[in-house]
Amino acid sequence: MKPCHKVCVFLSPLLILNSFSLAENEKSLEDIYRTGKVKFVRELTIKDDSLPEEIYFQNPRDVVVSSDGEIFISDYDGNNIKKFSPDGKFLKIIGRKGEGPGDLSGPSFLETNKDRLIVWESRNGRFSLFNLEGDFIKSIQFPRVTGLLWDLGALPDGRIIIDFEKTDLERREHPQERRIELCSFDMEHIETIYSKRLFRTKRITKPVTLSVPQPWNPNVFWDVSPEGKIVVGFSEKYEIEVYDPVQGKLFSFDHKYKPVEVNKRDKETFFSIFTITFIGADGQKERKTGAPDYIIKNTAFPKFKPAFNSIIVDSEGNIWVHANRKKGEEENKYFDVFNERGEFINNVKILGETDYPFYRFSRITNRCFWKIETDEDGFFSVVKYRISD
Image (cartoon, rainbow, N blue to C red; front, side):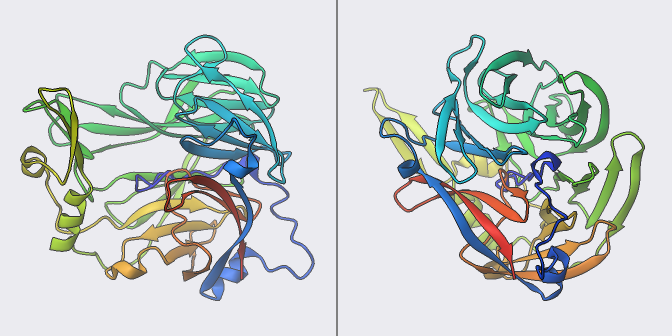
């Protein structure tokens, strides 16, 4: 989800609260999409003012909602999970900085499966499991992750989906492999559901050792439907596949699109986002913006951008696809929608208080879209938007 930013976005079926019981006279989401317009109406905002004086958001990364509506927010730099009631009232802190049992270091991805809270700790390289009251259960090292963990999600029966990227230093053409794995309720590996080799970064060793992003190369995006199907697409072409965790691939569908060229402005914008920190002989740090020569030399741009850069499944099973568009000012205002059978519904324009729902740590629960936002002063807030007509 989370993106785009690699936008590798995830929806947990366990988060859906009575998603198919529409209030009287309330339109289904599909009916709203057929009008070609949708609004995101702000319904709840959680920010520092929602917390006790001595507590604040340092770097919130993910938000998950339990079946009872309780809200859990991972704070990467705070090294804890902040828990709130369904109406946004602060309840407690879960975890503390450290490496021992119940400690957290760099918590990022969150998920709930039944009565458990699952936390991926980026710095400790493990999953930590708590009950929903915040009591520690156990930690699980995950040695299979030799590269980058992209996301995790839960199926209706409590099994867990893990998405990670392995790096092959010997392979030049496709040095990374994205793998979507099925794990048990207790995080034991069961099987690989999907894998795809790709070229997302290029590793260099001179003048420094690092992985150089290769912009607009095709990537893998996925989400889970309310029924527990895995909806996944490799953005080399506009084709989406639907998998059952037991039966495997069920079907695929495609959609016509016009490839968008990577232009000069796109390249300039990409290089402008780099910030390099130099340490002088006196120990003072100096920051310079813009990509250095060794980054520019090792960056290859494709002629065309990928077909899309994110997939989200809403709480009624409709599939959102965020396609790249020729007009940059329209990029964050539109998305394509398909029903659960892969039938095209409409190209939908976003109205209302926010745009661009397609970022890595997005969630949709019970017709509501959750988004982590930053204001002009750098303060964080977690916002719940109602999807409306």
